[in-house]
Amino acid sequence: MELENNSFVLGIDVGTSSVKAVVLEPVTKEVLHSESRDTRAGLESECGAQGKEQDVCQIIRALNNCLTALPSDKLRKVSRIGVSGQMHGVLFWRTNQGCHWINSVNLRVFEPNAVSQLVTWEDGRCTTDFLSSLPRPQSHLNAASGFGCASIFWYLKNRPEFLQQYDAAGTIQDYVVSVLCGLRKPLMSVHNAASWGYFNTRTKTWNTDILQEWGFPIRLLPNVVDAGCIAGKTSYEWCGIPQGTEVGVALGDFQCSVYSSLTNSTDAVLNISTSAQLTFPMPEGFQPEDHPSPTEAVTYFPYFKDRYLAVAASLNGGNVFASFVTMLAQWTADLGLETTDSNIYTRAISAAVSANDTHLTICPTLFGERHSPDSHASVSNLTSAELSLGQVTRALCRGIIENIHSMLPSHQLKQSGIKRIIGSGSALARNAALKQEVEKIFPFPIVYGKDVDSAVGAAMVMVQE
Image (tube, rainbow, N blue to C red; front, side):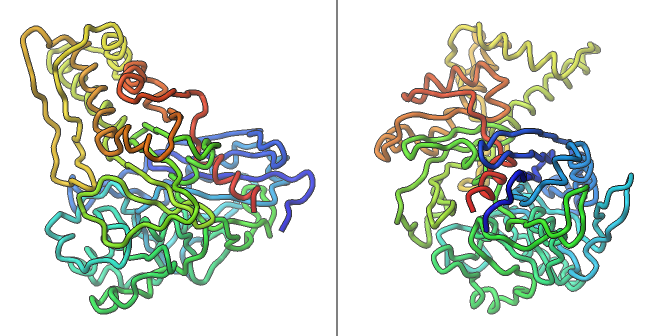
């Protein structure tokens, strides 16, 4: 179905720490307006430090606030909505009670109701031993902690009564689409289904036989459709967006971020934000093999139109540098001195940019890796001559880049026909030392300034359909 004349497309991304919404002009693909809000949704988990959970009410409140900040005259002309969000995670709800619609400042918004907390992609409750006890998926993607199906298996073993409360499950973006369209049974794109595990991307079906044999509550699994499909139409007016507006099935934030910036098949995208990803598109017709080695660092994510992305997805990126800054701030406070995290961040980067080269080596896998969940960070080659702030910061930046390069090395990129790398992400944009290390380690032209944006990508997908 074609877009209406003089209409706009709304793109939404429900991220790990913030939500973003953009209004896109569909012909020029120009972003006319953009708003973002921090969710501040983190919660203490019953699993302690290993658990990573978020308050769904807080996320939706931020989303509603984000939309109401956009120009009302543009929202009234929105004819299609694209939605992306953080992958792998899971929340549960009751389809007949999952939200209620209210009037807020003369605008119609929805609030979650009968909804669980969101178990995010960062969740670590599924230990290596627990994962090894689960059935082997019929899929080219291994299950990992933080993956939706793995988390459901954890509840099945540890809190089976919890699952009895709900009749639907999905990612946070699936929930948003389900509520907007009033779906009786949630829909999920191939993007998000693959990110949950126990999904075969060739047949586009869940591993129902395997799951049923192990007592998995398959009633909770959404129906799966191709990425880019229309999930339905808005059941109510929402923040001034007309009732009856088309809504696309929720997409993966990673795929949408790549879609927003990738223009040539010979480009790779290196994105360093909270985590880090290096990816490039596989040729048309490529099909990944089932049952990869659990230690394989490169995985293949479904993209659009039955294509795949080769992906080295590291759990260690800007979050490692942020932990380093937090450590320095704590040391400073312990010494009775006062400064801000932002001041430490700025001074550490400045010192690293001007520092002499160092033999100090930092392995930055503070948060483990999916292909090596038990790995830890380490420091080696310490000498008394290489302990300055600049040298340590430089070594940390190098370690972050070397880690992602070890997962998808330059020779493999060259063999795949890659000619240049598009560098993007908030951590890379803010950290000149990281950029320097990228340019040292990767023997390709590096292009900056074409930043990835999942909300923009989600809107662009809706323009194409």
